[in-house]
Length: 94
Image (cartoon, rainbow, N blue to C red; front, side):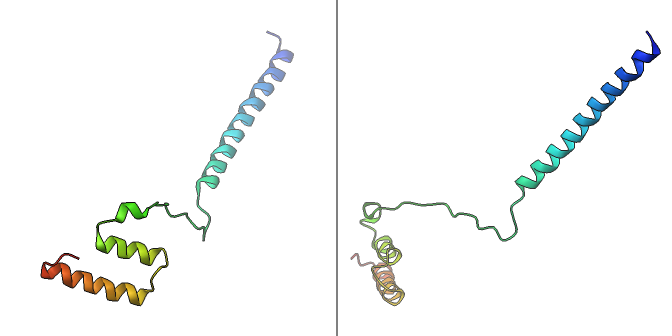
């Protein structure tokens, strides 16, 4: 093989290898950068769908459902919850 043909071929292969290595390093850094969660990012809470049919028959669940949907205030919720718990501990059913 001629030495004049060997040097350009070696340099071409060397440049290709260097560019592949630089590309792999850049992709690795980019992947790590994109997978990190930004500081102060807000993560979404899982959504739970509840219908009024799901809670019918359970007095505490019905009360919680009415409070969550804004039909009663916190004070009303706590008063009614206390009454339900007292009735349940006394053995009475509403």
